[in-house]
Image (cartoon, rainbow, N blue to C red; front, top):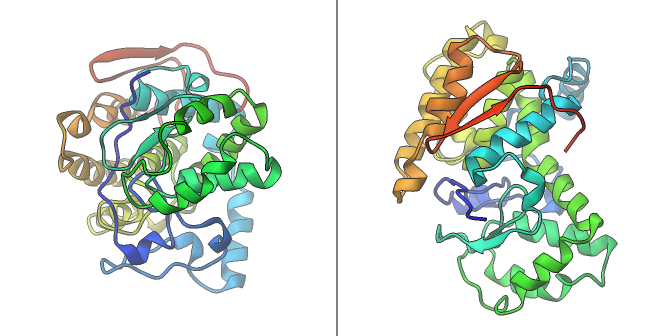
Length: 310
């Protein structure tokens, strides 16, 4: 299946150690508890700001909030929405074995959230899977994945890596590992921060989609940089601002980054213009079904509330 995984520009090397995402920078797993340093733009991860006691109090406050996008049915809906934009399908579970180089400068893109060989998240995934299943088909490629991290190179991966990925994807444990790393790097941080900012379920999805699209880095073209740009124009609901105004400003900032991408497909902003903005204009802050939206000119509909959890 052809992927349309849109990504931001690679971020600064200093930020690459701390954050991650489809833009070429994912925090190493063994640095998960480190606090981020601000970038030259001043963007930081607010979830890691403050003292340990303050962080603990924040997490406890967030834990008491309604599940929002983290509710099983809503999380399923979020996966379908992202898949419609990234892979032109609602069947996101059909993407576990998908792998190809889409020519975006990030090497191989694969799996349910577009893990990339050049952006560290694929390396984290294979390391995580191999820790529990050392004899898996991808284990032998770990040295090569470490070597090509941060580049678009296939050196040491061709010709067997794509077949090894497809073989591994038949293993339920590898599919679970993809879900776990997706949640750890993208879904969970996005939803927690959205709740901290006082956002609705729709706002939580907008954050999640932007985290996947741009990568959770602090560069101006990555998620935390985009949030910092939005905060220059308006306030979050948690800070006393109007949610619709804030989300429109955030989407403006995200859209501007997309328009700066190198290919026509990457510059397509339909996931914002004919999907997220449609929901926002309708005041559907709870992402209630039925939902109808368009990406790349193709119409998608979800008429009943999904069940289950991705």
